Image (tube, rainbow, N blue to C red; front, top):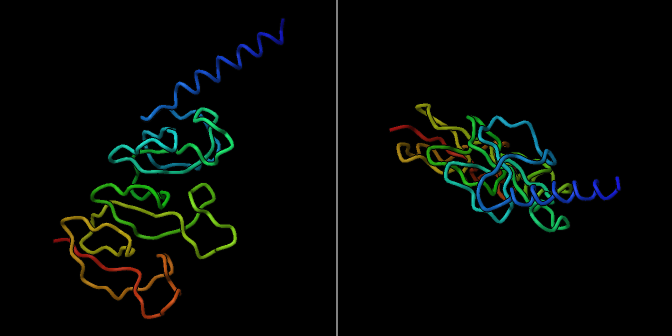
Length: 175
């Protein structure tokens, strides 16, 4: 009798968890693959869900509630970013935000343990200063213009790759 109750309780818990994983943000249900976040309204969604406007992808992980547990990763942690925030490089960048540096984490997509130079995260922040330095992959807010294309930094992608004369960051100025 005890074994039947345990199985029934586990089945009910699993069904409730599966029901929580739809195409919209839900309450976070798993701490697997998480990192301390600065973001607010942090939710767990299945990987095939679209990321709502203004939200960013904080990490990827596997969740039984998102289907086949064997396909890693099948879930993502999303949230409204704090300034600054570290996001996976596949994350949308909200309007008015810039990429100031790049890094790597095991819980973001395309992580490579064998390549220390491959970067799979972006550090983003809201553009507020008169001058900002941004990685070349950064969106430029509509109230900013490029002022310099000859900035080199190890914190942005392509540093030291191919040609030492190729810039990988720019200075932008607020209008």
